[in-house]
Amino acid sequence: MKLYGVPASRAMRSIWAAEEVGVDYELVPTSFLEESKAPEYLAINPNGRVPALVDGDLVLFESMAINLYLAKTYGGKLYPSNPQDEARANQWTIWGMTELEPHLIPMVLHKMFLPEDQRDPAIVAKAEVEVERPLAVLDAHVADREYLLGGDFTIADLNVAGALSTAAFVKYDISKFENAARWMSRCTGRPSFARAQAK
Image (cartoon, rainbow, N blue to C red; front, side):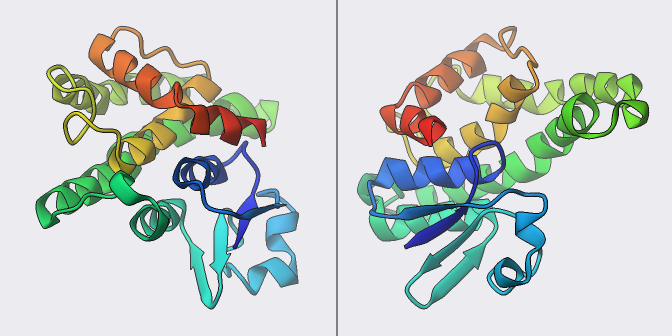
């Protein structure tokens, strides 16, 4: 199995998933800039983005799809055992992409990646305000449970925490959402997260 990407990108969440399930894989360092636009990589992921996964005849792109596949195929209890919890895991995975990331990505762009003369502090300020709504949803949901689906860490937690880890990357403090912050610490305190970061 080959996983293409670098930790300082959305590939981090798939590296984390691979480490969590304990599958044997080769990490092929591929930056999200020039390397991801090379013809040989575009043959794997025509979008020119990371990550991508090659597992035998299966070629996958999109980090969350990769993670759901890894969990279902290799993850044991990481993947829900019943249709109801499977639906909830999908719900939270999609929620991370549609409710959290649209606010976190502008922070990344305007704090770190755009040239200085193209960065707009007003866009960052707006994103910091708007991300509070989904953070409040997460905070309320984990107020009375350890993890998103109950007492066990699942792929739902890994996927949402993987998306939310961008906040730390741009030094956005979530501590006022105390329940969410405790949940995030539990998720990122796992040895698999440390191993993924070390890659």
